[in-house]
Image 1 (cartoon, rainbow, N blue to C red):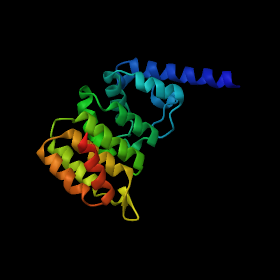
Image 2 (cartoon, helix red, strand yellow):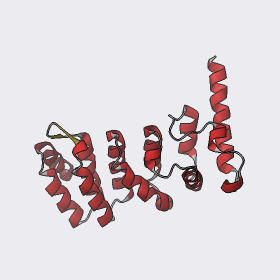
Image 3 (cartoon, rainbow, N blue to C red):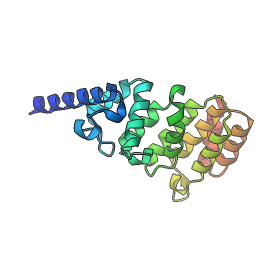
Length: 195
């Protein structure tokens, strides 16, 4: 039974690869439903591995294809796929699709997705002093879902770390002001600035 399942996953991954590599997207008879790839479903191990091996050009085609199928936002994907997209949105060559993905991730219902978005924004915009990202991080920090019983959750630390990476006087002053809201984040901000 395990062999049959492994073979099925391998075949599914192969069909996904063929679908992604087969241009043009608009006329390809092989679409996601036929190969078993469904953005709202949990990815299989083979799908996950293949996704992380795809080139930026293949990812852009995949996003475009799925957008055409009605999956127009990151929120249209399962939380595991949302994490995968955020992890892949660190390279600059995916700029057109990644900024909306990252910004949507900051507002996600799942806290782990919001935290991942903050981390990836910090990595992607490191040293850029991006006003757009500083404003987005400020709004995310103030999101009431990032606290529980008056205490900040780990996503707040991720946001402060991202602001430190984004850099510049404005990001630093915004982060220092935000960190003062809670003793835990004030201490965390002081700690990451000692290094």
